[in-house]
Length: 107
Image 1 (cartoon, rainbow, N blue to C red):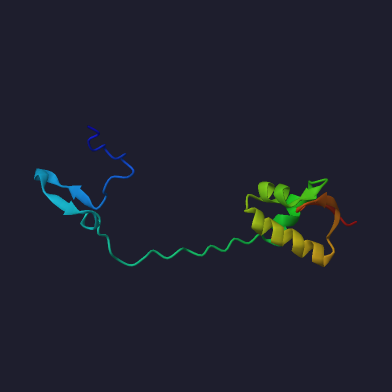
Image 2: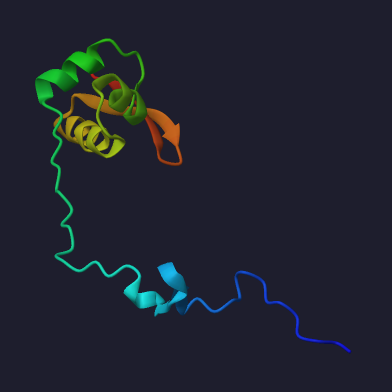
């Protein structure tokens, strides 16, 4: 009475693939691409001090996100640049919380 039920598509056997002409091939033979794995290119983006100071000159409140957007660089690059300026004494921390720091220029 209660015959076999069809399995959902997600549960069906994925070990076989039907090729042209109806022959059955194992799934591993479907896409065999061997070769050297591609290496990720290492990119080094540096915000030059002259370009960075031009960006900061027009800002009232300096944030990492603002510097990144104005200079057209990633936030990680802008963060390291702002931290280096803070270490040199060009910027000082004025406020912010939870990783969103606000800096001001030292006069």
